[in-house]
Image (cartoon, rainbow, N blue to C red):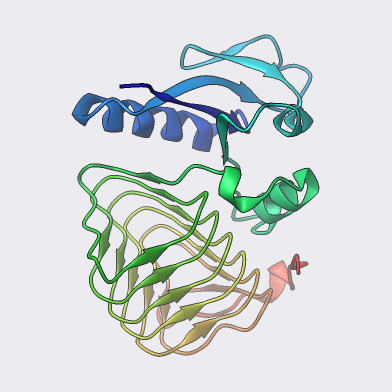
Length: 225
C-alpha cells in the first residue's frame, strides 16, 4: 500500500499530539507518511519534533505538490482564531488538507466531518453531528445529536456538548467544559476549563465558572471572519 505523505504546519504541542495520532492510525493500518513540520519560528527551524524535521517556514506549504497533504497544527485559548488566520494566510484549498480520526473514536454514518479536522482518542459523536473544516477535537470529547460545529473550532480534552448546540467559527471549548442543549457559542468565544455553559456565549467573549459567566478582565477577543 502506498502511504499518503503529510506535512504538519506548526511545531508546538498540537503538532506533537498529531504526530502521535498519526502513529496510532498507522499501527492499525498504515496510511500516512509524515515527512516533516513547518514553523515560522527561526529557532525551531532545523530542529526536530518527535523525530520529524522542521523544514522551514509555514509558507513552504504553498510550494509542495498536490501529492502531499497538509495539517494546520496550531491552537491557543488565548488566541482562538490563530488556526483560522494561518489557513487563510496560506490560501491552500481545503481539499489539500488531511482529515485524521483516531482508531478508538466513535463516528456514526450520520456524522459529517470537514477537511483538515483532527479527532483524537475516544472522541464520540452520537448522531447527526456536523463538524466543520480544521476542527481540533482532543481526547474523550463527546458531541451529541444535532450539534453543529463551525470551522476552526478547538475542543480541549473531556469537553461535553449536549444536543442541538451550535459552536461557531474559531470558538474554543476548553478541557472539561460542559454545554447545555440548544445554546450557541459565538465566533471566537472561549468557554473556560470546567465551565458549565447554560446559556449562549456571545462572539469573542470569555466565560468561566458554574454556571458560566463572562470574565470582564479578558475583554473581547478579535474574531477572524
